[in-house]
Length: 500
Image (cartoon, rainbow, N blue to C red; front, side):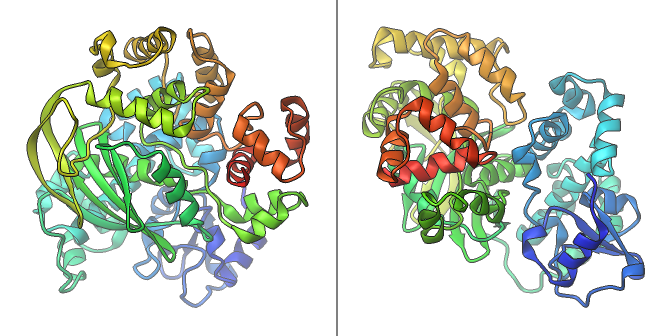
């Protein structure tokens, strides 16, 4: 990633929050690295270096600033926009693939050799995949130190370190403090009550139109999986090492997140998926500037700045929702999905939701009428859907078989629905499955794969929204008109839905 020194220095001098996460400021005279918006005195030009990643700054021997906490900055919006190998690698690293499968696993997922992948990431990010994953482990460890009362050895392994010594050495290098000193610096702040409960702040670039996000999620919320109550979004999670639940409350400058995890090794992927769900790494200033240049959209952008694209925490779940939602209303799709969920009996240890957020872990039997007492769980897995009898689907035969075909493709690996997937290849493979057409595949590209430039021109609600704004409302003419909205047509789609 090439960075213009003058532009970066001006951003630092003005403490511009919009550039947090885009790059990091290294101050050679103090040996620290900061966010561009750090409130400290602007360093002299001769003492400044700019880095494309926290890992690159750490590799240069710099430690994280304790004042601005650069490791907690929003992620770069590039990894939402870019569909190339580096962008895919960054999304997979954030989801914990290196911690779970190592660099060989990451390289295999991307279809490149380890050496070539290291060369590409080093050229763009100033650090290889191991260093990038190490920086993420350090941040995860700091969160656990400051928000739980776990023993340091437990935190070391939960954060993904191979040994306590590696954990100690890394935190001393990144934060210039022993792990015990970081906990002491927490002061008298009490850790959340209950094993596995973690509270943290998810930063974003303002503005954020939180009400639009919550409205979108609320009308589609599935009983037993998710709920919106009193300005907080609750949902169950299916994570690599176990189950979890999260309560997300938008606030000024951050989203307050309370996570309850069955296995603390899932903290990094849980945070990454929550950020992806709420589209917190987006650059609303750039998006709104492009859309506001169209006089038809300008009033809506002015009235509602910071509209995001609600994405997904589970690609398979979103695919099932998309197939069931074809050519039916949101209410009808929600009814069918609820029937599908309650058809599968599951007895397991899940995280339980309470009115206060999250509580303890207890066994429950989810049969017949569905979960009781506000219990939240993750969506059905592909294997669980395949185990359902015909009577459990409650839908036409063609749609039922389309769901089964999708589930079989996910199980055998011929279709990948993860965030780091090659978007074009994933859409091509989805279109090859019976019962999946362009609308469904493109809807998944927008919400499951994070493509920011999808226009659902054939969607009825999109066409109604276009007509309400005085825009062309036939699919071909709307698609031609929407070329001016590139590369943010997914955000225009959300605005057209709201206009409808």
